[in-house]
Structures are given as structure tokens and as C-alpha cells.
Length: 131
Image 1 (tube, rainbow, N blue to C red):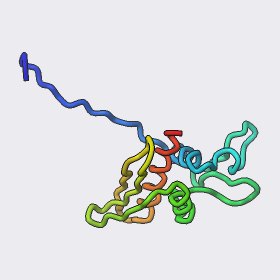
Image 2 (tube, rainbow, N blue to C red):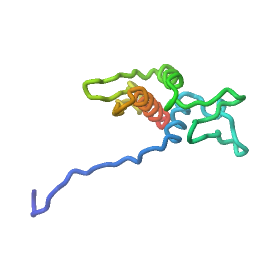
Image 3 (cartoon, rainbow, N blue to C red):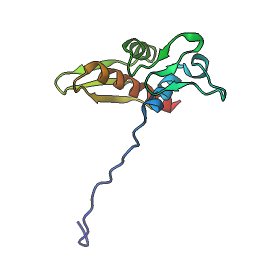
Image 4 (tube, rainbow, N blue to C red):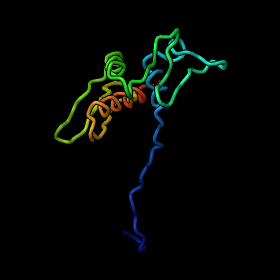
């Protein structure tokens, strides 16, 4: 402390992404973006906040935040290891390569499956951001 001034560390706050933004970036990372989803008149993928993205030709919904199968396929396709850390009461997905490398932790709360799915989607979204 010099000149009577207190020096505080700088905090960086990142904007939290919406579920739609997370899913868009995760889809981009998995190569699912425009050629997989049903498109509206402006050629944008159709998204329902309660369900997720509509797949083309009546193939259902894609939402790895709510569907265990979609989340597992996303983790396998992008080579994302997942961990359930009971010691910390958190789920973690890891990206081991590229600009998105890091650990993506989610508190387990009452639903370890939802936490694990969200960790996977967050990791995939970071990969999508780096593309």
C-alpha cells in the first residue's frame, strides 16, 4: 500500500449464457447446427424454451440439458470426460485440448444427472465458442 491507497484485486465477471445460447454453441461444436435442425422461414433453427431444438423431418427434439442420451452422445462425440465428485458435491466435464481446455463444474444439488448434463453442455459450448 503506497500513498495511502488500497489496491484491490480486479474481478472479471463473465455473462452467464442462456440455455438456448449454451445449446447453440454445443450444437455448433458437435457439427449439428444448420443441417440437422428444423429451420423457420428465416433459416434459423426452431427452438422451444420448454423442449429444445426441433430436429428435421420429425425426428424429435435435441436437448442435452434435459436428455441423458443427447448429453452422452455429445460427450462421446466431443471426447469430453465426465466425473461425479461426491467429495465436492459437484459434477465435472473436462475439455483436454484447444482454446476451450479446462474443467467445467456444476453443483449437484438434488439432481446429479441434471448437473452432469449441464457440465457436459457447458464444456461443449466452450468448444463451440472457440470454433
